[in-house]
Image (cartoon, rainbow over the protein chains, first blue to last red):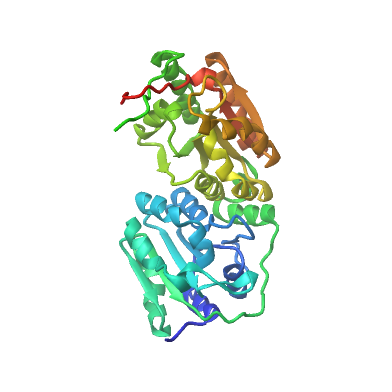
Length: 196
Length: 188
């Protein structure tokens, strides 16, 4: 069965990204995001496992004019499965969640996750109420997804089945206060970013 | 089916409504626009006020730590969010509290207490007794409210501390204030 290269896939999805906010989960997806550059609209997590999608929801509700993309791994998404129910109930039209599913806990020794054993995250999302759900295995399916990330006026959930190969780490900044101020300054301007 | 009786026994409904109204008014005055919760009967009135106001967005959570990540995202986007929960939810929050702490973000939660005053359910006691310590150990400033008169000034000060000084703060609404639940077999 064919599998995607996670870095190539994300680079494709972020082509002509324009003003898209990207929140990443901790670990491999943070490195994937860093491998695509270091944009002020990036918010890579280094912890808070299970929280990436909810950070995305908060951003999407606070900034309805921006598209918000959450890119996270299967392990991180599994820890926050309940958030899929919470998000579907809110149905923010500007939020997209993409799970890089390598069926492994890649940071900790490549142990299999539940998606290697029994769980289909796309089915979970659909069951929670996501109306636009897909699982992608072929590079040719990435461009239509990229178009939807930019143009679809609705909540979207996509699973990318990616190779479990370990890639060289590309580290994003890990100072949380810096990342916070950088994103707020970009969205709100420096003066408001420095205020409460 | 036997169910717990949800009535308040130690304080009348009007008193519960009174503090909920003042907290709701503070949310409006202080531009808190995003209210998330795992419901508790102690927050019932406040949740109803918030859900009845089209200018507020309410988010029903499956577990309390979702509300911390939600508040972080809201702050990144320039909005103020508050998390409502019961003391039993505090333990669910511990690791996620690292997010606002490391990122120097404000965080405010209003916690209705169980397991500390006339509690009928022994399963509520452990988290009720440890909530304050767990929060403080996680870097959260803890303030308690024991009477109706203290609600407005304490929540107002907590909002200022959270959003002006970017602190993590929890206001614990004592079980004495919200009233202890009782439970009788056959009640529903």
